Image (tube, rainbow, N blue to C red; front, side, top):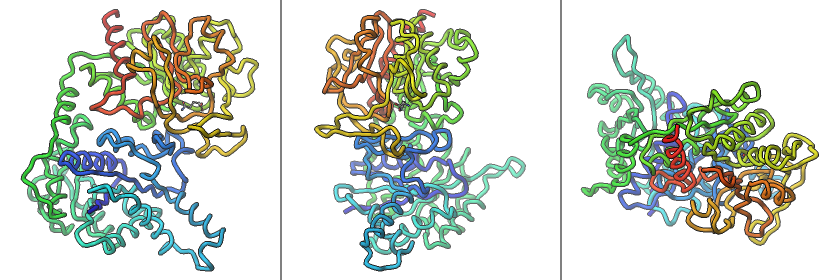
Amino acid sequence: MTRYVFITGGVVSSLGKGLASAALGALLQARGYKVRLRKLDPYLNVDPGTMSPTQHGEVFVTDDGAETDLDLGHYERFTGVPATKADNITTGRIYLDIITKERRGDYLGATIQVIPHVTNAIKEFVLDGNDAYDFVLVEIGGTVGDIEGLPFFEAIRQLGQELPRGLCAYIHLTLLPYIPSAGELKTKPTQHSVAELRSIGIQPDILLCRCDRPIPREERRKLAQFCNVRETAVIEARDVASIYDVPLSYRDEGLDREVLAHFGLESAAEPKLERWRTISERVRNPEGEVSIAIVGKYTGLKDAYKSLIEALTHGGIANRVKVNLEWIEAEIFEREDPGPFLEGLNGILVPGGFGQRGAEGKIRAARYAREKKIPYLGICFGMQMAVVEAARSLAGIEAANSTEFGPTPEPVVGLLTEWMRGNELERRVAEGDLGGTMRLGSYRATLAPGSRIAEIYGGTAIAERHRHRYEVNMAYRDRLEAAGLRFAGLSPDGLLPETVEVEGHPWFIGVQFHPELKSRPFEPHPLFKSFVEAAIVQSRLV
Ligand code: GLN
């Protein structure tokens, strides 16, 4: 029997609904249930693939090649279950499908309306493919009261009536702000938010209340009374030091107990949270620290690098150190010498990115790391820029560049127009659509035996997630290898460079894929584990 938990948000955005959903997923999993997490996004983009990282944060890529909301990253990291295309949908996608059907004449003359056509499409999405799961947690993006969210709220309201009795719960995540002049945590915004939910027919069963201090008994009572929930269903979600403390903190506050009680599944058994305790303990008690520079272009919004930050934390957990991140806008290095910024840091990371702005700065960062023998990890764009740098400095190809920035006489990085996906040839044209047309999702790669990267992975066959339009140009391979840049990893057909490494450098690796997307706290990605280890070695030299 599949049970549904709908998670909505109120009062303000950015309360961490994704994290809350992921943590609840982890708790239910720790009680032996099979859990699936899905996200409904009310915006009109068909997917977040075309949205600016500085506005929307990272685009999380799934194995099956979907560009999805970054909350799916939390889901994966907390439950270990790989997300798929079918775990995230937007209003844009729903309308695109409906309008395509309408143009085809599939509706046989009917008037297409939000209710029932849009709400039906949402319900079909929510209910599809869940047979194998005990719990499906469905997070609704945005905040109650948003105009564009209404069809989603309406759809989950209808499901409350249509699903068999007792198989559906609503959790509302809200904020209890502390007002210093009154010396109180205020419940009024939550009361209003719940009133708004009830006005569209949804009565929450559980309130998950974000706050920065304990909720006094009186406020709990008030919330229960005014919001029409049980007092035990007012759950305190207090700020914690690390996101990996959230499952434990929810457990202590009784969130899982309350959810199970709602479904009549009370159990005296304790959830198995050993691995969360270990992680929490390790994050809290590091035995040392290292500092890593992240030279990027979206450093103003850390959400743009969500998985990266987490993967570095995991690398730290694996090595029992705290990883301090130094954020540097790549453009600075176009005006100033990187030395004073990078000196004393133990590793340099150039992450994925798009477009020319800051590219020369990233090339300078790569040069600094190579020359000063500081551990360097180049991810996707960070690998491409490292290859351009090596071409210019080591192979003497002075005009080396990427065609992403316009025509160049030496296209060391060029547009990728054809590649194999399994046995199928994928093709793109230069002036095609931007949405969903990159080389996306999991692709296999073969690592050269004896290479540094093969040693790190402990094997030569890997599969990693990709999201790129450009690719290092194989035509330059011989010249670059002769100059000391080894093409250690290739696509299985040998046509696309997947990883490079600088020979004779303590740790200089570029990867065309995004390893950060597959790292988990209890299963740190080997590249991040090794990179942090190299940074520790470097820190002993400083
Ligand atoms: N802009 C580069 C490309 O499209 C790199 C993309 C990335 O870093 N994800 O190939």
